[in-house]
Amino acid sequence: MCAQRKPVGPEPHPGYFSDDLAAADPEVAAVVADELVRQQDGIELIASENLVSRAVLEVQGSVFTNKTVEGYPGGRYYGGAAPADAVERLAIERATRLFGCRFANVQPHSGSQANQAVYLALLEPGQRILSMALPAGGHLSHGATVNLTGKWFDVVPYGVRRQDGMIDYDEVAGLAQETRPKLIIAGGSAYPRLIDFARFREIADSVGAWLLVDMAHFAGLVAGGVHPSPLPHADVVTTTTYKSLRGPRGGVILCNDAALAKRFDQAVFPGLQGSVLLHTVAAKAVCLGEALRPEFQGYARRSLENARALAAVLAARGHTLVGGGTDTSLLLLDLQSTGPRGLTGDVASESLENAGLTCNKNAVPFDPQPPRVTSGLRLSSAVGTTRGFGTMEFEIVGGLIADVLSGLAAEPGDNRTAEAAAKRVVADLCQRFPIYPA
Ligand SMILES: *Cc1c(COP(=O)(O)O)cnc(C)c1O
Image 1 (spheres, rainbow, N blue to C red):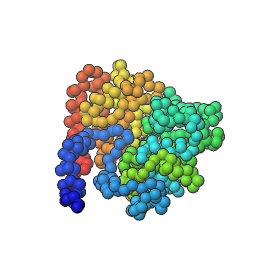
Image 2 (image 1 turned 90 degrees about the horizontal axis):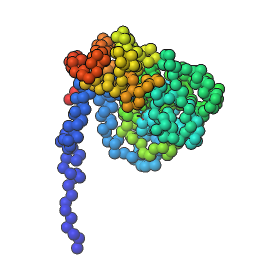
Image 3 (image 1 turned 30 degrees about the vertical axis):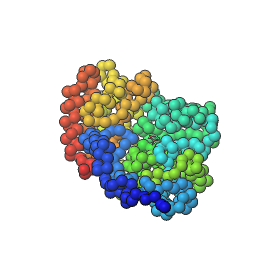
Image 4 (image 1 turned 180 degrees about the horizontal axis):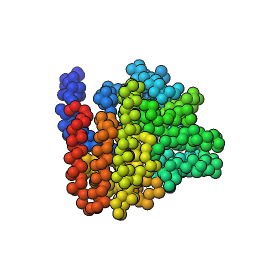
């Protein structure tokens, strides 16, 4: 005789398929609501962030979250992959159209993993990489000693010139001749000026090295036509999709060579990653579609104009900009000559955050301070521009930053007066430029 089974409900628990987050998990929902308030009520100046569209948010929370696929469109290891194939093909087609190249891999889970896939495809362990030093503005994933790249490869760092904060191409060429790297990397996370891609190509060719350009920070400006493209010069270009491209958190690998493209595909899967974050790939398709719209060119142009307006105000108020200004949406402020004693990045970023201006402390070239302290601040126009700020608003923001820093230089222990005054203006600006409707 069969045991009497308890009737099973239609759902794993009541509301499983129907309750929204607020009903299902008020605790987590409350924290998400706090984050929305933080984004709405503060001025975000962190260069590695942006505000995605409602559509990008929606597709990241879509049912693609449920689907597992491995491999590439047309050659998956699991069934039921037709919509997955369609969405990944859309992302690939849009990426190649946007950047005018032949091949794109849209699966890297992050910018660091896009770079790791390039190393896996092109290098053997122990081979040499010539890349920008982290303190000079490079990125962790380009060979920092604490990173996998620094442990598994032989990394030779190049820096910037002390007098103007610019890449010294003669130094790079000399180091290449001396050390014969297999791979040269251009691009960084705190280098505000244009990079001479043609010169890097020449240097790479002179020693038979591959050239990788990591355009994580300026990809949106390339897409919008206000920054030169590295694609005609580099063997391979990597980028993140969540900075100036205004998309989901993830990476992309671009190239023009069929044989290399195959190696990168192999390196991403099965070399480095497992199944695809399809909801994120879908969101990449959406953000790339947005970047193909004519309005995106306006966004890119305004990001640049706004960053330059911010730089001009800060320079006029006596601040030192590494590289003397910017050709991108980011700037790097050197605080060593701010006030009679100079300021440090940790103290300055904390005081700015109290004023509702969120940014990050950042090492400047030849920084005498340790990484936890630093002598710099990295600022960006990317998020404010998405909110609708123009040069007028960024001039106000620049004035507020200068006010807070002057207050700090005058009264290192207590900057509450300057912070409170700035915060009132920040609140007014944020109210005038709302983000997502509740
Ligand atoms: C932001 C960034 C990355 C990647 O970052 P993830 O946090 O791994 O997505 C890679 N390279 C550069 C130059 C960057 O600025």
